[in-house]
Length: 151
Image 1 (cartoon, rainbow, N blue to C red):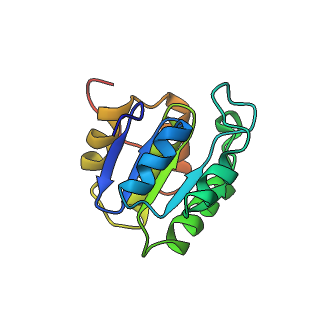
Image 2 (tube, rainbow, N blue to C red; image 1 turned 45 degrees about the vertical axis):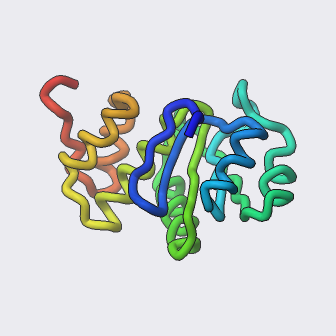
């Protein structure tokens, strides 16, 4: 997949940066059924009519903007509900650069799927190194908030 920072977390869940219209069509060809956009509408690379393009392609679309400057418990809890609501579908989650999306998926993998936090963090760090605010958020939501020794 040619989407910036694209990463397959498992067979039914992938994340990446904002896809272009052509990349949205490519996601459909790759059997994705749902696109979850957690970018704010003010993101520099946002596509104004993304919902229209996604739905025209036959996929479901959810837009849940997350402002990572003001992380609250409701952000993760709502994200969890969205992912669980589509648990039998192939889902692509994105934000502007796959920072917020990969952090929330890391949390989901640990808190809901029982993945080892260090293993999940190693996977996350293949995409990006979280800022300290994310480690604080991980802890506030019940994770250990561990950092790798090279972070």
